[in-house]
Image (cartoon, rainbow, N blue to C red):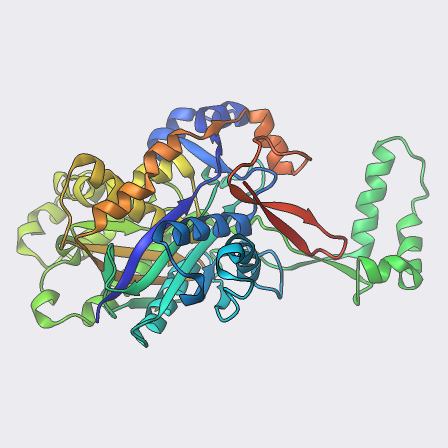
Amino acid sequence: MTVGIDDIALHIPRLYLDIEDFAELRRLPAAKLQRGLGLQAMSLPDVHEDPATMGANAAARLIERSGLDPRRIGRIYLGTESALDGAKPTATYILEMLTERFAPAWGEDCFLHCDVVDLTFACIGAVDALHNTLDWVRGGEDRIGIAVFADHARYERHSPGEYTQGAGGGALLVKHDPRLLVIDDAWGVCTTPVHDFFKPRRRMPARELFEQVLDLARQAGAELPHDLAARMEAALPDSPLAESLFHEDAGALTLHRDSPTFDGPFSNECYVRALSNALANFRAQLDETRRGTPLTEQWARIAVHLPYARQGHRMFPELWAEERREDPAFAELFASLPEDDWRRAVAKTDDYLAFAETRLDRGLLASSQVGNQYTGSVFLALLSTLAADLAEGNELSGERIGLCAYGSGAKAKVFEAVVQEGWRDVLAAEDLFPRLAERVRVSADRYEQLHRGSLDASVREPAGEFVLDAVGEDGARRYRWVA
């Protein structure tokens, strides 16, 4: 039995900020962002969008296009690092929206027996969702599952990660005899606990919070006693504020932000190291006839995790060279490269540039227009590659595609897919690049408002999509379909 991805649907927010407008806003050289990092635009969620709506919109599109009976879908696993709740899976919100959408045709219980859960491991969570769903589908001939990814890559304003921001969601239909990609049960894995990128829960002492608020009041002209913060702290345990804001810890406020703590250069090192080990682990699972040939030659195309478009070019030269270090044909080339900047020198060789142009570059095209999708970025690279090949009239049926995924914290997974005869029909229906061209460009001022969350109304009137309708006083989120 063959199992794999039968169809793929992508949801990209219909708003974007052009990177030239961003560069002008932050007084950065646009050419460096464009040529150095490959950035052209970043997708921006509108007021009515969040990770749940983006994932639900992609899943609904997938179900409708494939003509699926929702009652046959046994699993919807979501990969995200933008979860909306500390206990309730974001996938349950997605299921709630899908039920509303499909209940008129299939009944109120159409998703009653569907298993859902969130998987979180930074940017590799959606690959984990796919991996688990593939294993489950292999266990029964009639099983159908959907792996969903949805994220908003949001950084602090003026931070070095701000220009890589992006957002989007997607859905992968997993079934037997797929039309798009067959995925074998060989996975290279490397897990190394590190702190290269994370979103920690922080504690702010009550006294510190009070002092900052009082300092702000003094800056606004208020005359306040200097011991007021201490008096407020002493009165806190008997105040309603202790329960409503500080909960059980009257001495500190627990904080959690969607924007990460990260070390970019260290994360790049972790990425290369984890992927190198995962590649070795994957190679060891192949039969002997394939182990002697570099995987980077066996794979007609390679989709990699792209926190920014040209990350593949910065990261992959070392992996490419690693597979050829013992090859006599490359001994003279490697011996001639400078030791102090070896990786950069490899990236400029004719051999590597030819490799990248053929196998990597098509995957960068959509990333440059969208920005970082976190858990979805490797699948955006995959979709971008296939869409570009379709537009160029290339034939990929029977070819192998390598997928190299990474999640900070850190884990890498390497697997491969074989392109099926029906790939052209699937990609034509997805219509990736024309849909990206239809988005609405927003101004830098509007971007700032969206980033701060200061807008009450949507920039663009929603139509044909799920929207966040309201957030209750208890924090419960309510969604609806807008025709």
